[in-house]
Image (cartoon, one colour):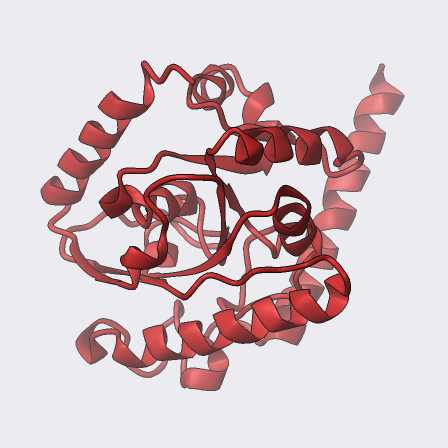
Length: 255
């Protein structure tokens, strides 16, 4: 697979990290195999998770093809960029095509990234997982590597202003590979979520205290922060879906 765009994008991203004075806590990156198909399951807390999720595979010299929502591919700027990076378009109403493309990539020996929660977690805790990650890994016969990001939500996430001020710590924690068989997708999905929950807990607790004092909006309520609880976050998601549906309906009426 020819990658004309990806290498300069990585150089630009690393330059941006330095300009932003970002500090990285990276652990477990050796768990990403240096060759062969691999599926990375990444938690989703902010809009820049694609960039930092891909960074988890950089020490292994891998380029990650992320499964991403169709809206990004429909945009006049991000669409051509996403295609040039060979990311995978996901239509949430009909996900069969994206699953087939992910399987093709994996069988060709590519690294693919997936967000099992499907959407950003407003509570910054793990949402319920879709079973797609374990089903894809099982069918492709590739390892499923859990990845936890922390700190990315402080830059750009739902319901908050962008903040690209200097000096933030970004934590990236990679767990040992899982090897789903596909015999019980629900149980294997629960196992994946439990593993990632443990990694998330370790990551939050080892994050610099001076960067997430009690009451911080980016810290989960269960850790003393002021982020919405998972229940409150779900209510906000439901309200957002209703608002979007109303806007789509209004547009159809206007046409």
